[in-house]
Image (cartoon, rainbow, N blue to C red; front, side, top):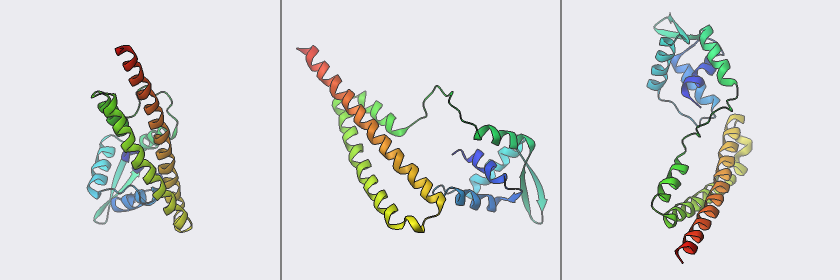
Length: 177
């Protein structure tokens, strides 16, 4: 979640003070995404500069609220964006591609190491969720579900990478003969 759009979403509840925006953002995200208060105020200042947010002095602090432009920006963010041609930057993809530049064997080592780490992570998260699912907020359960499914997806992707890398290595050995 982009912090900018997340803060706009928080402000859709109505005018709020900066610290309340921070705590509401963290609550909405199930406590998974913590924000530094300085980051909140810097982002709010940029949103104000860009005409998305307006401020009103209230006692000894500012009260932030959405402008019509901010509401429009938030409405655009809610819409799906299936037109993106550039894949998002993903550290795991970058690791595999970087390792591949050093050779198939290095890439296979990185795949194996990440598969082991992700499998362990999945086991831990599943056990944690089963033990405390009833005590978690809905937001926390939704975030945990997302983390589990992304890890499962990464494992499937690593399996595909390994298959491609092994096929490439076999082709290289065959062509070397």
